[in-house]
Length: 153
Image 1: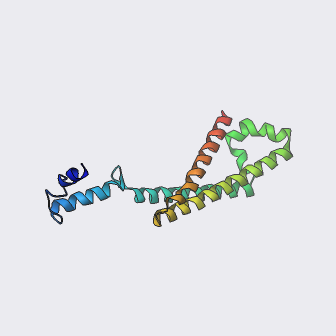
Image 2: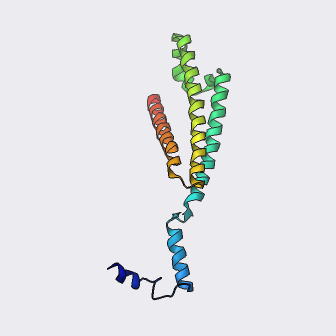
Image 3: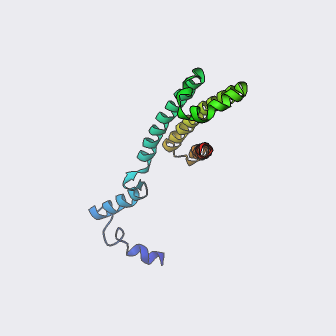
């Protein structure tokens, strides 16, 4: 059965090896596996990685600024609506939790930046196992964002 399918394939015996049609079919088969919606998979990976690194750097900078200048968050509507009461009720516990959240935010995005670098290294060296840490980090970040947004509502 395999022999019959191979003998009647378009790039096999109907068109000799090296003809223009077989070259087009071979190229289409090769690029078809690496394209996703007309975009090369590695190009899409590099583009999203650059965006992720920029966002991680911005989040790290925001975390450092909010850790060093802790009074800046008082201008946010969230503080005026919810956190001002918690701060007046127990200020020491509030500042401890604030520092823990700000430092955790910074460390989490720093680790995410490292996993993006591992993903780029995995794409260059064709080691798909290096993509797993970023997937786990993205799942963790998605869960944290869902939990924090649901806690605000």
